[in-house]
Amino acid sequence: MLADSEESPPDVKKKFEFLQRHDVPRRILGHQPSLVDFSKRLGISREALRDQLVRRNLPSEIQSTLARKLRFRLDWPEWSAGTAAEFEACYLKEHNPAPPPTSNKRLRKGSPIAPERCNIQGLAAIEIFAAQFNRGSAAVGFELSCGKAFLHGVPITIRFGEVTWDCGGGQLDTTTRQGRDAPYPVGDDVKLEWNGADSFHPAWRVETSGSCLGNVDVPPDFARIVGLSPGSTITVKFGVWQPDLEEDQQTAANALLAAVDAIDVLDANTLDDMAKLSTLKKRILIRLGTEALERRGDFIVLARHRMTFAADE
Image 1 (tube, helix red, strand yellow):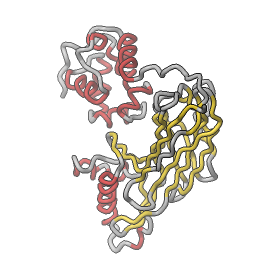
Image 2 (image 1 turned 90 degrees about the vertical axis):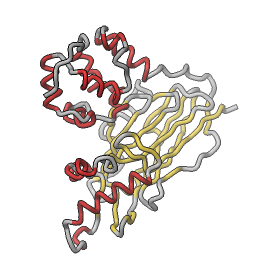
Image 3 (image 1 turned 90 degrees about the horizontal axis):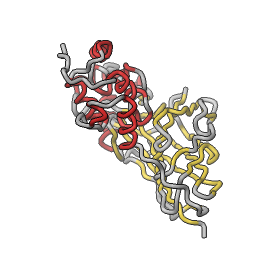
């Protein structure tokens, strides 16, 4: 049982709800706005969080976990003594700076940069495209390609994942619904849905009702990025969520079936022993984590592409 803290901050419930539901802390931790997912990402039981929030009193242990995982300091006056509005303003200033003014120069695509992908041949690739260049803005889309790969002798495909953008100092144009309509039509059996985050680092969940995403072609009129300048670089990434098997084999194994929905193991009926399936999935996920281009918590990036912009003289 967690002991009550004698130094629980004022407006603690509102501050907690901001960290749970706002786009910016959600981008940092990678959680959905539900208490179920938030508590899972924090590594704290949902019941403990709920009980303490009812009392409006968070133990110091929970406060420390929030600060460590959501990147703020407990000695911030806005957290320890300020109002919820003051803490929110301080947090957003720290983690979500305003974009630079829009350039007055018309843009064009800069020097080409080759797409990057993990070393698992044929699993995933992504490429960014831009068109409709204007002063400080461009319309941006992407092409995602997922195929069959072989790991440990088993063919695997990806059924769903997440596409994330780093807008390179610019941001998604929020004056229109471009890129944020749900679902965005990309095919009969593929859905692309806005997954929150924020306008500086937008994210979309892509999912198929079949066994493999295949080729997902999203045209440049999908979304417009504003606030760009010559030298700005937009990065688009595709990845999947993975339990942290290397650090906690047993806990991850217990939650394996819920955590590996993104990975579809084909031809499972050909296995001599169906009990091997979970072991194979575990080995596959460890390999994916090893071969990833980068990792953000439980999110592993399998493909990435950058585009720079230059002044159209």
